[in-house]
Every structure is written in C-alpha cells, then in structure tokens.
Length: 165
Image (cartoon, rainbow, N blue to C red; front, side, top):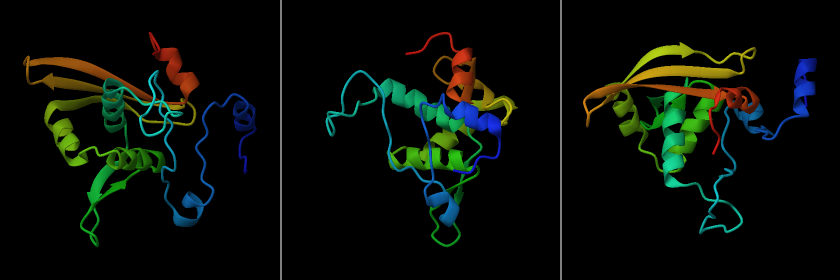
C-alpha cells in the first residue's frame, strides 16, 4: 500500500468498505468489478448467504448511478460496441449496470429527454462527494420535480440524509 497523505492513513481505520486494485488498474489501466455485495433483509435465491436487493431499491440505485456520474458511453471504433469512458470508478459503475442487464442506451436517451441538469458540484478530495441537481419532467403528470443525487464517502453522504434504510 502506498500512502501519499498521512490523513488518509488515519481515515483508513474507520473504513467499512474497501475497493482495491491488485493488478487491474495498475497493469491494465482500467478498473473492473470483481464481486458485488448486495444489502437487504431478504436473501438471494442463487446464494442464500448473500442478501438480495429489493427491486425498488435496485431501480433507485441504477438511477443514482446514471445521474451522478462523470462517465459516459462511447462507441468503440474497433468493436463498434458501447464502452464506458470517464473516471475510473464511474466507468466501473456503468459497467456494473451493463453487467446486471440494464439497457444503458435506453436509460441515457430517457435521461437526455426528461432531465435537465441544473447544478453539478464535482467530486473533490476535499469534499469527498459529488452532487448533482436535476429538473425532471414527469410525462405522466406533466409536472416538473427537482431531484438531488449525491455520492461519495459514506461518512460524508450520511450527514446529508434524513433517513437511512
């Protein structure tokens, strides 16, 4: 482990989740999801020891990943397939959405059609979070809503939550 900042070492003692790269990022220049841990009260049929995630929570998570991301899908010139581009972590999250069968093209078109980005506060090591504010047009009710999505270090994000499920 290479530590550039002494404060990072102090914070390491409070970590609950760790995302590591043994060889992927360093030798291949790209991050990839190796294993997903799902959280909920019920259990997965495939693996009774691993909790399954409720469909409503999964849809919310998918939406948040798409809305609060610096990554985007680009067509690879050689394979003519969509490829995630952008920051390492955000690319990994988009690839995860693709791995679980999310129609990314449809979701991106939906995002461009029905959502307008009002404000973006980019991720920074000082803030340890990224926040976006969207104006959402609801086609069913013909009304607009505001949606705020934040991602980042759990100890920072939790401070902004009214409730935790």
